[in-house]
Length: 247
Ligand SMILES: [Zn+2]
Image 1 (cartoon, rainbow, N blue to C red):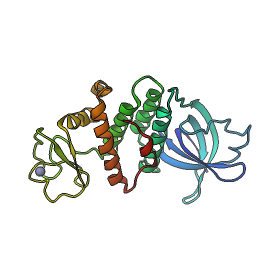
Image 2 (cartoon, rainbow, N blue to C red):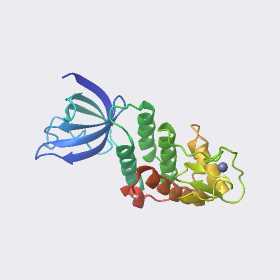
Image 3 (spheres, protein in one colour):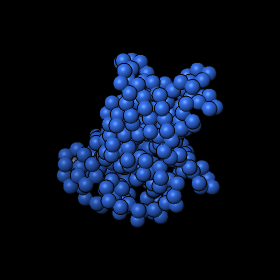
Image 4 (cartoon, rainbow, N blue to C red):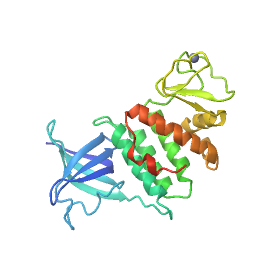
């Protein structure tokens, strides 16, 4: 068994026995993984409280054969996520980030850019920028980096340019905006205001223009509803933390 090292975010900690836990991790080097942490629940255990939800730590683990859990041998805390707001909004957003990664990330499929975006988002959630816009921005980044970004400027059905006039049909099954010709007969269709449609494009660009949307309350609410629906469709289920996200 070779010892491997990784930079990891803790996504889940589940009791395994009286003293041990199974941790779900999102690592920069290996993607998502699960590992057995023996002694994790002992007060002065070997992991020294590094394994809290959303903690970022340097881990060492032993690879086990297929089907067996990897064995965590070391976890050194690098930074801990603090929610400093008076309400619980940033904590819920942090939990939502962990839930999204648990659902979407794959084992043995490293996505270093997604790791970096996630770590940066957790840092921003501790700051003063609005939680709802940070959450939307993170979701659009996840969709972009995982290749699930909906098509917006062209029709998801036929590829024609979308005319930004009136409300724009958005097909969850089709995977994006729809032109008038493709709209009839499509299932699972929402509609977007032209402002919402533009904001969604802004949020999906890698640059910083999205920061200008922090106070666009109505648009945030509209996109929150649309993305809840879009995730439901993509994952085939409702994310638990959705109910706790504000707009
Ligand atoms: Zn079309």
